[in-house]
Each structure stands twice: as C-alpha cells, then as structure tokens.
Image (cartoon, rainbow, N blue to C red):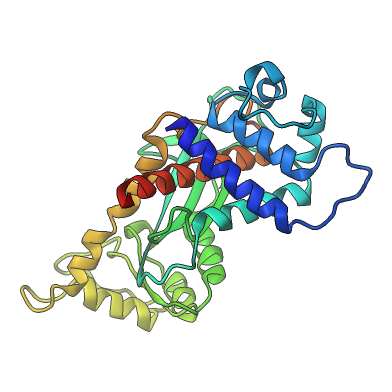
Length: 299
C-alpha cells in the first residue's frame, strides 16, 4: 500500500511539475523537490530532517537532484509557491469536480499536550471534552479530497468556519449540506442558501413544547425543520438525508484508520503553518490511498 500511495503522489507531482512556470534561478531546489521531500516524510510519519537524508530513500524513489537540508525545507514550506504547488497536487488527486448533490461537513479535533508551549494552539471544544490544540474543518462529497478544508486553533467556532467554507463552494452544483445539531444556525442557513445549498441539520433543542423563540429565523432553517421533523410516516426524505450524515464520520475515520493516517499531530508539527502543512500532507496521502484502492477495484 505504501508503494501504491507513493506512486499516486509521485505521478500527481510530475503532472503539476509539467505545467509549473519556470522558477527563479536563485532557488537551488525547485518547489517540486521541496514538496516531494515533504510528502515522503509525511507518508512515513517522520520529521522533515529524516527525509532530507538520502539513506532514507530507496533507489527507485530517491530524486536524482541533491536533497535539500532541513533549514531550506523549513524556509521553503512557508512560501506561497509551496502552498500553490500542494494545492495543485490536491486538485490532481481530487479529479473532476464533484456532481454529488449531498455534501457533509464536520470537524476533527487535533489535540496537543496540555503542557505544550505552542503559541498558536488554543483550548477549545474537543471530542467530548475541552482540549488544547487545533481542529480540522472539512466538507466532503464523493471525491478523494474534501471539497473544502481548513485548519484552525481549537477555540475557533465551527459554525464560523463553516460559513467561510460554504461561501467558497460557490453555487455551481448546489444540493444539500448535511451537518450535526451544532451547525444549526440561521446565519449559516442563509449563507448555504446563497451558495445554492440547503443546510440540513437537526435542531439543537427540539421536542414536544419546544418553540422557535423570538429571534430571527431563516426561512431556510424553517424548511430544514420541516425536512427533519415531519409528521410520522409522512415524508421519509428528510430523515433519510440525516442518516447519510454519518458518512462524514466514516470519511474522517478513514483518514485516520490506516498506516500513515492522520491520527495525531506529531511533536514536530507545532505552530500553525507546520500543522497545516502536515495535515494537508495527510489529506494527500489519504487521497492517494483512495485512488489506489479504486484502481484495484476497477481492475
């Protein structure tokens, strides 16, 4: 599986390199090599300095050019060129734009040690308890890569990040956006409707005798309530949509449930830019694994 994943990653890097504009002569190492070394370390759950040693590559995978040193990697991974290149690799692995009508949104806490001195990590809502660290926010459809994703400190509100990501979805495809009760918010309903999506999230407080209150109620939230709380045996469409929301938990679980998956943030992934680079690397490795598995099934 490791070789299959690397084959997918390497092919995507080569395809992006073929269309990458010519870089300044002041760079000793091209951006493609920086990305290749970074993904090699992420695939093997090792720090970047480990991948900078030629002894940790085999003859088939080691680049022909000299490998960069750790200080060069640290500097270049914070550049805009590195970010654009890995985004292009992600677009290659994602494939064609999704035509799925149903998308799902959720967050995954990535805690660090409570005594960590990382100045970018924050205390916030984790998995059933308060935790210190970061949080991955993602919108998934049916592709190997999420449609939108973001990594923030743990204390950033998931609903606020959802508004930003939904705006970036655009209104081209449209459809339904499934979420849990934490995302039940009139403003988010309006933002999703502006992007041509109907947010489907159960009410945070529902049941007999529970009203809507006197604050602003989005008409799209009222439609969601009609979908998710229909009279018994009248319209099963809404409840069936809610049942599909669990797929995002499987998506996030599969992101962690294999050798090389995003289980935790390692000790060397501290500060927000390192955590983002590591997390995106894991998303790319997971996408390569999914593509390799689909190729085997198709064969």
